[in-house]
Amino acid sequence: MSYDAVFFDLGGVVVELKSIREGYARFVDQLAAEYDLPDDALDRWKSALGAHFKGREGTEYRTASEGYRKATAALFDGSAPPESEWRPLFDRASDATMRPVDGAVDAIRAVADGDRHVGVVSDIDTAEAHEMLASFGVDDCFDAVTTSEAVGYTKPDPRMYEAALDAWGGDRSDAVMIGDRYEHDVAGAVDAGLDAVAYGGDARGPKATYEIDDLRELPAIVR
Image (cartoon, rainbow, N blue to C red):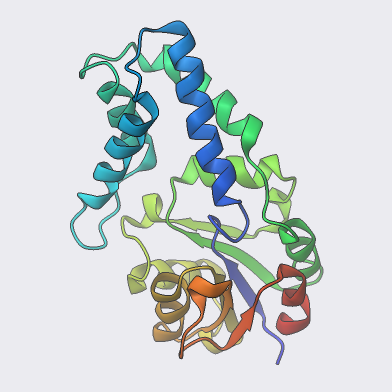
């Protein structure tokens, strides 16, 4: 069937997750070149960031920006330099390593070719989402960007999907979500009344409408 609206997850679908982790490592390395940091600085930084996200209540969202502040403070025993000093390092490191998932840019442009609504539904900070899309040159392909920071909750909370559908204004039975995580992106979308494309092994499961391993398969599905 064809769909009037297509919603993309970002991390793992549009943005390569490995490239984000490489950005973290690059940032800590550059920070260590300017400050006296412990030998296990990267492990400490990632541990503090992980604890930040794991400490949330249910599906309530904790912003990544706050997590970066906590993780960086952990390298300085809680007394990090001002954010105005380290945040530019972080942003440059992220920009230098960030890569799109293979086939993502072509798939997005193909899906956006026409009157179809194209949106984002992602557990991410709003500014970060727009920066990612702009860095790949596909920001103008999206009609709306629904983030957990704006909604206040993470997938599979139905409020994420309701917000995205409200931004579109169409019938949910004519919409499809593509994601790389089963519970969050696939089951969450189907439970909210959308169809779902499972991208990759971690997204496969009984509720998936379609299963693909190459994003270049997506345009044929949504048309």
